[in-house]
Length: 274
Ligand SMILES: [Zn+2]
Image (tube, rainbow, N blue to C red):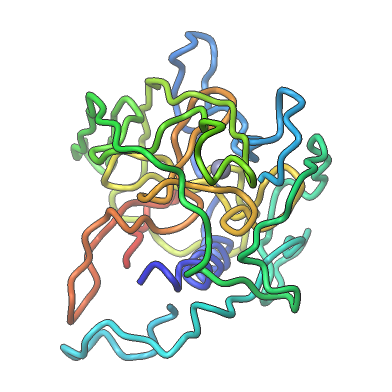
């Protein structure tokens, strides 16, 4: 249920705070980088672009109840500034709490209601249907789960940079192009819950589509899913070309009833479900 993704993300990130710090992703299409480019993404805020950069399923999964929810997708809470330096209910325990990215200017999304909520059904979507030479594999090596890939999705993406002719351009002039990455992640195959919470970084997991999952914030510490505009699969590139999500993608298949499907892994090794 796409309309519920924000709540999912918040719950996911809060949950993530309970687990050990993620092992640093080993990547580096630019040869020297050992971690994914700064994930506190400034997708839409570089190049002086004046732009408004940018389910909680209540039912038990022990039954075959359909995946439904009564969350109102037209009035979802906006998570701007919901980060903290300590574990706190309703906030992301974020390693970075100094968000001073270049200020974005421009028209705020017309899907923002003005009462602290936003309308997911109204949000602009980046046009396009671009296919990519996707590569992603997962193997178990001893007690580790090793994930390798090129960061390109197994689904189509929108056209990036966002074209001036795209209606999304009014809200987000994301100037970045999607580029191949070199991702190798080694995660515990059988993770255990940490004794102490630790903060989460900019990138927090990887999905089975081969796409990296970033945290909930844009470079200004705002709710990225609200202020940045993504494509039909809920992804977009940041300045280093890393195509990423900030929430569960609509292009990841979930089950209709019963337990949700595995959709990815958080960097602490725990599975991410729909
Ligand atoms: Zn982003």
